[in-house]
Length: 510
Image: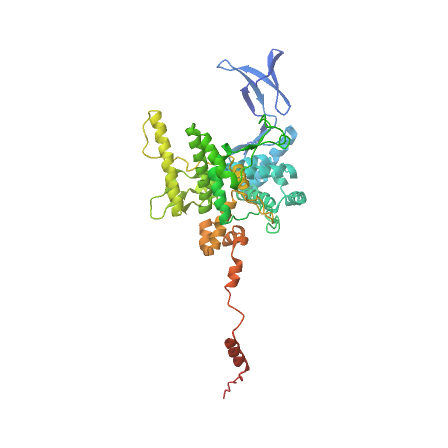
C-alpha cells in the first residue's frame, strides 16, 4: 500500500538580518525586520553552537511530499499559503501519480501539468542556466532575458499556463504604433520563440504557443540603414584618426561673439577652434612645438593616433566586427606565413564557428611595426623597473586597446573629416559601417558573390548582396555601358534588312 502524502512548511535558520529589532515575549526572543520591498518579517531567535544568534522560521508557502508515478518520494512547492488549497494540490499530484502507475498518463505528461502552475520566473531562471551551459554570448543572453522579463510584465504572464500569442500580438501592435522598428519587434519575437521551443523540448509545454507569431517586414521598415564610405572618405577618416589626438592638444582658441569687439584681456570666455581637415596639420604641428619639453605626453598622443587609425583600417580590410577585433590577442596572429591571417575563436565570433581571417600585405606590415613598438615599450618598462626583459610580447596581449567610448570617438572623427553622420537618404555611418564598406568594395571590385560571402562570413549570399552592399557605390552606369550597342552601322543594318526580306523556304516532307 502506497503511503499517504503530506503537506508541510519547511523550517529553516538564517543569520539575524542587519538592523533587526530583538524583543522578548513570554520568555522567547523574537526578531523583527523589514524587507527591501517594505514587507515586515519576524522569527524566533535561537543560539547556535558557535555562539552566534540565528533566526528560526518556516516557509510561508506549503510544500507537498508524496510518492510519484515512478515510486520515488519527491517534494514539490505547492505555491499555496492556505492549507486547504495546498491539500487540493497534493490530491491532484497523487491522482496524477496513480494514473502514471496505471499507464493512463506518461511521466512527461504529468511533468507538463506540474510545470504549468509553477511561477514563470522559475522557468526563465532554468532557461538562463540552459543558455549558460550552451555557451551563449553573455551580451546576447542578457538581451534575451531582458526581453522576456519585459514581455512578461507587459502581458501579465506570471505562470507558464498563461503563455498565449494574443497578448503578445496586442503588445507588438502597440509598440509598432509607438514607433518601435520592425527589426526590434522581430528580436522580441525570436526571443519568445526560442524560449517556447526550449519549454517544449524540456516537457514544460506540449507545443510552442509563439511558433506562429507573425514576422514584421524589416525591408519595408529599416530604421538603421548603414552606408559605405568612399575611398576619399576612408583616406580622410584615417588621417583624422591618426592626427586628432595630437591636434586636440594644439587646437587654437578664438574669442566668443561677445568678446570679439573688445580687447582680449582674458581668455576665460574664449572657445576652442573646431578641428577640420584643413586646420588639422597646423594644430598637430602646434602641439608638437608645445610638447617639445614633454616627450612622454607627445609620444603617447602620437601612439594613440596610430593605434586608432590602425583599428579603423583593420576593421575595413578584414570585415571584423568591433567585438571580434577586441577579442584578438597577439597569439592569434600569424604574420610570418606565406598567407598571413588572424585566428578568430568560435567563442568570439557571432556565428560561433571560428574563422581564419586573411590579412593583406600592407596591413601585415603595419601590424608588425605596431607590435614591434609595443614590444620595445614593454622592454623599456622592464629595464626601468629592473625586471627580466622579455624577448617577445606575451601571447595573451590584446592586439589593440579598444576604448570603451569608441563609438563617440568615431563620431568625432567623422565630424572632423567632414563626413556626415547621415546622408540625404538618412543612411547612417558608424563603426559597423566599416564592415558594410568592406563588403561593398569587394563587390565593386568585381569579386564573385560566393567569395565575398566567404570573406564576410555570412551564412546566406542574400545577406551579403542586400544588406552589406551599398548600391550607391557600385558602378551601375559602367555596367550598363558595357552592354552590346543597339545603334547598328550602315553595313550591319543592310545585312539585317537582307536577312529579313529574304524569302522563307519551306521544308517539304514526302
